[in-house]
Image 1: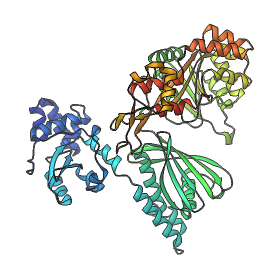
Image 2 (image 1 turned 90 degrees about the vertical axis):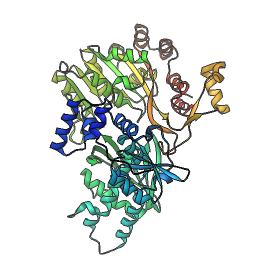
Image 3 (image 1 turned 135 degrees about the horizontal axis):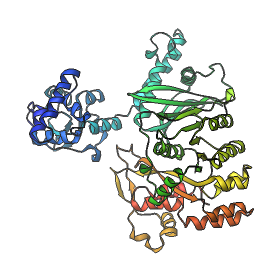
Image 4 (image 1 turned 45 degrees about the vertical axis):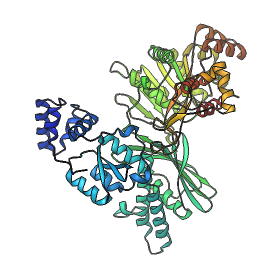
Length: 568
């Protein structure tokens, strides 16, 4: 196609009715003051969206607009343009049609970018317009840095084999530390982890190799295999960053540190453990720039959401969220706190550790080494005149009793407990030694949850259930199984070939009605279980998982996986 012509963006937006003269004047003044691009100013000022600007440019130039959110390019074609140039020129190769490459540009009137891309590709191109945010997200997905990480690992191995190298410089403690091989390697690993939406990084020494794995959407995926020689240098550097004892390699250690990755503030919780072949390191990544979810965005069934909201707005009582590690309990509690957080209420949290910082809330981190235990902090917190108290976890009888006594005496207490389902939660509290009357009087509601992976919207396709899946579905759906349409993800660039992108919750709830309270007060577990099942009326975790399957949001396999966690 012909070389595009330069267009005055401001005039174009006014001409198409997307911007007023006053808004344009404001944006131009801001551009003179700050030097930023006009398009970015009007988007940041909420005058117009990125998509609207892109569509206006496409209309003016009479070229197509492509929504990259629903586009699945091939990696080998995207990689025709190196990542650095793709980011610099805001351009990406989408596909090839009749021997010509289709290239998406954020700003098709940037003639310098157009000429450079043309020179790099050395092919005839057809221009299309794409939104900047969508392009950067696509670049993040496609240009994986696995090869770069492996290359840095090989570089570090070579440095370790070279005797004259000063070890302080090698691990990044000397001047110019940012250029140390281990620092560059760890920085790249963290960047790739954030790019991949990983929640955890596992660094595991093996007999002859070092394995690095990321936990993405709850599932571990291998990212790199490297020489085992680099394992001590990595663990040493991470210990220095988190203030751990670098001389102690025989005992487990826990710590934390903060890093900045691609303009994101990341809190890292680190745990080291001695293994047969060296120290295993696991890091939990907590992105502080990620906005906290509200209860409306947790995908709860409407009746469950309504009852939860009613329970947490009571002046006193206890609400427990249960489930295994990594089931989203903390996210749910923070979502509840964000709704309760007003200037009229004093809120204190007791956590180990404090995962996310909430403005206006008094957050206390437990520190066992100095005897700052849950019990001690909780006793002190109740003397601070709180309205709402969040206890990170009911770990023992003493903590549970203090929390429940607070719930009885006029405080709203939110906490978590590790149980498989809601029915076993009151029983677990009794097994811990908490008196029956205390459980009956304090407990208002129990919410159990799990996380299931969501089918990637870009590669979803019809799925025919296997005989085993069909039998599992028949248990809940009966003879209507064949009337439903089921989906699965084929695997694409958007989901890194997994067929899933993101996770969502499944829930079940037990409300402490008069019947339930009376059943708890009687020393008969069987009668309590029967009363609880009547109150729940079949609205179990399994049923909620099936709801998502029928809606086409998750797969039958995922629903069966989380069902097997709590059902025989």
